[in-house]
Length: 161
Image 1 (cartoon, helix red, strand yellow):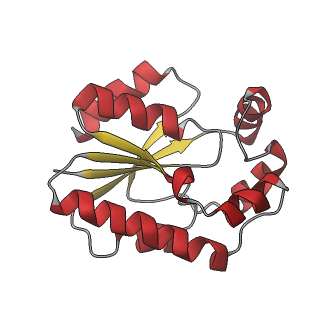
Image 2 (tube, rainbow, N blue to C red; image 1 turned 180 degrees about the vertical axis):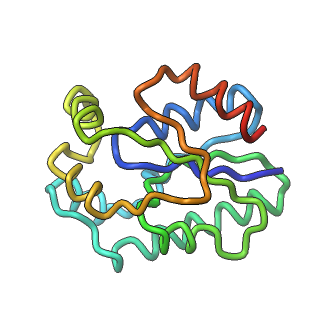
C-alpha cells in the first residue's frame, strides 16, 4: 500500500488534509509534530527556527515509522513540513512507495490562518523563515490551499488514487 507525505509550511492545512485523506480512502494518518522532541517544541514556541541538527533525529524517527508502515502494508498519510529536498530524501530513504502531496499557498493567506489558530506551538513569527527555507518539490501532486478541503480531496482521488 502507498505512503503519502502531505507537506508544506506551517498553517497550510497538512494535518487537516492528511486526516481527511485517511478517512476518505482508508488508512491512517500521522502528524509529524508529534515526533518532535520537547527541546524542538520549546525552541519553536520561543520563536527560534530549528537547525538541520535539530531536525535529523526527528526525520530519522519519521523515516522509521514510514518504514514500519510500508512493511506492514499500511496506507499512511504523514503530515510533515519537509520543506527542503534533503529532508524529503531523508524521509524517503529505503522506501519504495512514498508519494508527495504539496500544499501550496501564499504567505499572506497562510499567515492569516496561523494568526487565527490557538493551542499550537508554532508561532506566526516563524512563517517567514519557513518560506525562506522552502524548496518546492518537482515530483509532487500540488494542491492549492486557497480551495476548500473537499476540492483538494477530489483532486487527490483523480490524480493519485
